[in-house]
Amino acid sequence: MDKVVIFDTTLRDGEQAAGGSLNINEKLEIARQLEKLGVDVIEAGFPATSPGDFEAVKLISKEIRNPVICGLSRAVANDIDRAGEALKGAKHPRIHVFVSSSDIHILHQLKKSREEVLEMARNMVKHARGYVEDIEFSPMDASRSNPEFIYQMLEAVIDAGATTLNIPDTVGYSIPDEFGRLIDGIFKNVPNICKARISVHCHNDLGLAVANSLAAIKNGARQVECTVNGIGERAGNASLEEIVMILKTRSDLFDVTTGINTEQIYKTSRLVSELTGFPVQPNKAIVGGNAFRHQSGIHQDGMMKMPRTYEIIDPKTVGVPGSSLVMGKLSGRHAFKERLSELGYNPGDADFDRIFAAFKELADKKKEVTDRDIESLVAEEKRVGTVTESYRLDRLQVTCGDKGVPMAAVRIVCNDGRTMADAALGTGPVDAVYEAINRLVQVPNKLTEFTVKSVTEGIDAIGEVLIRIESNGITYTGRGADTDIIVASAKAYLNALNRLLSSRIMS
Ligand code: MN
Image 1 (cartoon, rainbow, N blue to C red):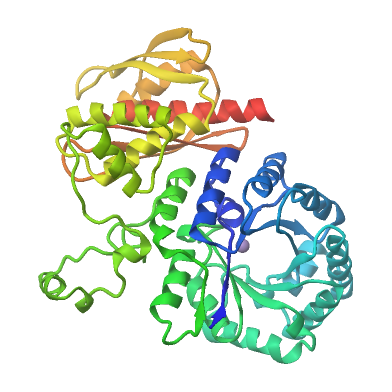
Image 2: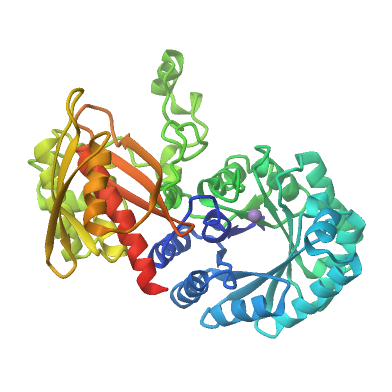
């Protein structure tokens, strides 16, 4: 069977999504998980866009050895030089050069002629070959370009040394038949096409990113660019987990395989959602919270008699933890360690001690501690490790109700051990807490998003708060979890502020 190369762009296109903001440690953590998932190529960033992207690509190149590490670059010498520089330490480096091919883009954005663009493409692919052997080239907005011009451009860049040709549906405009024909046309009309692999990069503006990618595979494409949970610019990219599971589940129709270890899918999805702050909708295929829950009585009856009656994928195949053993306050260290390991976490001793202490504290408040609770605890503890904590919440007290003025008193600990305390009024308890923190920390910012959700059912559930704040045009995400949602809100706000402050220190 032919192999379809899985090119993951979660760290580039996915992170480009509005509100996405990962720090370098988080990018590395996602890259490590993508390696475990078995992706063939990781597009780690766009080095020329910012020092942060450059450093992330450099670090991932050094640390992640199995997959190809790719850096994106415009067809501009300076961009390519930055990409080449960032990828220097990579074991398998790839530079991905793109230039627009549609008249709409060429005339209105680049203000050049087709001939000039063709020349740029050819020269810049050659330039990139000065750094690496493995070159990918994308004619941006290919699906709205003149096919004859695409053929011409592809032929030229293959001669210049491109080895993967990526056909993007940049604006998510194509429909499957049409996109499939475009790929077929390329195979039939580009004379030297046998020297390169065809890839596709589909966007989901009309909800067709996955369908278009499959149409391309049917027509001979052998690399798919996709993201975990389908995140990305605007409506997002083709979702990795859907593509992979369609190819696996319907292998009767697609005679291809992938190198993905599907049992890592669920964990990867959770990690990306947690770190990017983009929740997964409950009805999302493969990784949504309801994807394997059967509600109808007839379906439940069928499932009990024989799972295959209503289940086309065994949830274990994608690593969804079995509905499990519930832990409680009598559970000991050993059992807890075992459970963590079953969920895919193997923390070192110091981390384990902290997570276990948090678990015991939670078990005192909550009778049953489920897998989701444990995932939330681990995430909460991990936040300490990935962000430099300038401030940590120490004490918090609020008064609120339908009469009277909401008021909060807050004490925080600074990283030099000093404590600071203050109180403030607000329109509600969360507002009062944020006001009090503002008085202490004094970092101007604007709150742009605030969501609370409960981790599990039940009145004693852990509440997870996700917030986004904006400062100087940059968005910072913050998360916090606690059985008390006001405490969770305070933790989330401090988490966002810590991110903001540590990014200032770095730049
Ligand atoms: Mn894109």
